[in-house]
Image 1 (cartoon, helix red, strand yellow):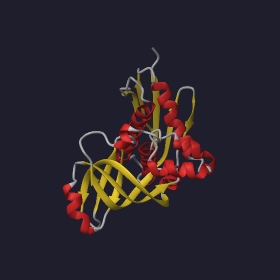
Image 2 (cartoon, helix red, strand yellow; image 1 turned 180 degrees about the vertical axis):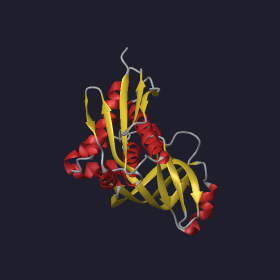
Image 3 (cartoon, one colour; image 1 turned 90 degrees about the vertical axis):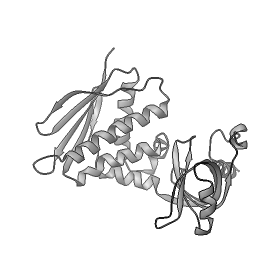
Length: 254
């Protein structure tokens, strides 16, 4: 079985590549590969190994995997950098194919271009090399920034209750494997504390990004749910789509 490989070449801005910058590139690249496989629901998760390295300029690291789907994962990883370089609304459907966390990891890879790194190149056999720039970060910010608001509700586990600067908690949605920031008025602090680490339903004004994903909600009501499945889980008429987004789709189709 042939192995899949991805080579990362990092050029220093001055005399050397800072360790933290190099680790940021590698760790976020590995996270991207993992997120891509999770989104594809591949049966075998790839185990990536170091297969080659060079300290000569540019600093070069090659990682490889023998997993059957690893080659497609590498191709998709490089495609993400290639497409996010093309900051155009024409690529809207392409962005919807990837999870929000995958895009954030891509943005974090290029964040080191301001931290001792002048150039990053990703290469793989049979695929055109990609050299991502700060345009990747600009594109990700454009699509993930909140742009409109609507009333909506979410269900999930209430986590990470905080009173620092603003009273907030997170709702973790297993469906998206994603946490939503929930801001609430101080007078609801006792109510939020009582619901901590429990499955809840929250409703309020939701902010959405250009991909139609919720970024945050200003909570108006909190309801603790039973340990069993909720109505939304037992009767799924939305096909897994968040209720507010599903309703807007029906409205726009009229």
